[in-house]
Image (cartoon, rainbow over all chains, first blue to last red):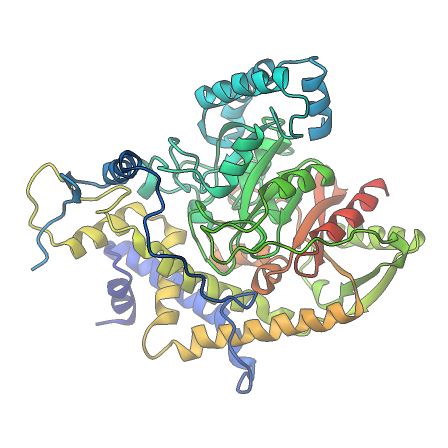
Length: 96
Length: 471
C-alpha cells in the first residue's frame, strides 16, 4: 500500500483517484514545510501538551440533569441528530 | 456607535430594543447578499429576545451594559435550536441541541443574537474562502478577503450588521480578520473563556473571543464571557488583577524576528510610525529576541493538524451530521465504509489536507519525528516568551505580514496561505492573550498591530490599547 493510501485508510477518508493525486502532491509540499523542525535539537527538552499546567478535574459520577422529563428531552434531541434511530438507540448497519 | 452609546439610547428610551433589532435585521437583509457574512439569520430568535429585553429595560433599574445589544456568532459556536454548520457540508443539517457556555452567558445578559456567521470550514483557513457555503467579501474592498477563519464575524461588524461578534482563534482566526477589516479582535488567555459548545478544531489552542469596533467594547464582551466553567475542565477563574499603572512606566518589547523579509512595506511603515509615537508619549520600547520564532509556524501546523485529525474523527456519518449512505433502505455497507464514504464526500479540501497531515504525524513510525518533536519545539517557543516577559510588560508585533489580500490570490497554494498566520500562531502555542487593533492604513486597507501580554493580563492589554486608540 502506498503512503497516501495508508494514511487515508487510517483517517477513514475515501476519495477519488484524481483528488488523491492532488492531495498527495499538496501533502508533500506541506511535509517539506513542517520538516523545518529537523534543524532543531530538542534532545533535552520536555514536550508540552497544553499552555497551562492542567490537571484532571473529576466530579461525582451522577447524571447532572434535573428531571426525568428533561433527561428524556435531551436524549430525544441527540437521537434526532443521528442518521437513523430506533427507539432509544442510534441504528446502524451490522458490524460483525 | 459603541456598546455604551447603544446602552444609553436603550435606557433613555430613545430607541426600543425591538426597533434596534429590526434596524440591524433590515440592514442585513438589504446589504449582506453582496458581502455574505451570515450563513444563518435568526430574526425569530432575535425579535423574541428583543421583546424580552425591552420588558427588562422597562422594569429593572440596572440592566446590564450588553442588554439589548445585537451580536453575531461564528457558526462553530452552538446556539440552541439554531443550525450550526462550522462552514462544513458535513454539518449542513445539524441543529445545535444546547447553548455554548458563552452563549448562555450572553443570553442571560440580554444580548440579542442576529445570526451565525460564515467561516472557513471547521475554522481551517485564513481567508474564509474555505467555507463550503461560498466566500465572504471584505466590506472595505469587496475584491479582497476579510481574513479568516472568523471572516464572516469580522465582515459583519465592519459592515455594521451587528455591534460585535464572537469568533474563535486557533492560530489567528480572530486577530487576522480583525486586522484585515480594521477592527479590534481579542484572543483571550487559554482557559480564560470556556470552550464548551465550541466545535473543536485543536483543543490545546482554541479560544473564543470578541471582534469589536473599539477596545472598550472588546473589554465589555470579554468580561461577559470569561470565567471558569465546570463544563470545560481547562477553563480557569482568573485572579483579579489591578490595572493601575502609568502608560509611561510600561516596558514594551518589539521582537526583531517579527520584521521579516516578505513583509509588506506599508505594514512595516505603519508599525514603525506607531512605535515612534509611543516613544514620544514616554513608553519605553525595548528590542527583544524570540529566537525560535522561525519554527513557530511548522510547530503550529503539526500540533493543530494532529489535534484536528483526532477531533474530527467524530464525524462518522452515523451519530450526527450528514451521511453518504441513504438509511431508508437496508445497506450492505459496514459502518467503516459509511464513515469513509461520508468523510470523503462531505469534508472540503483543506480539512482533508489537515486530517492527512495530522493522521500522518500521529501514526506509528512518525509520531516521535513529527508530533513529539513539535510538542518539544512548543516548549522552546514558550520559554522564549517567558524570558522576554522577564524584561517587558507587553510585546508589540504586526498582526499580519500583509494587508487583506485579493480573493483567489492564495487559495491554490496551501503553504502560502499558512504564512498569513506567521505572527499570530505563537500566542496560541503559548496560550498568551493577544489583541489586534487598527494602527494605520495602506491605501484604504487597514493595518493591525498585535499586543501580546502575560497570561491572564488582558486588563493590561486593554488599558494600553485604549491609550493607543488616543494616539
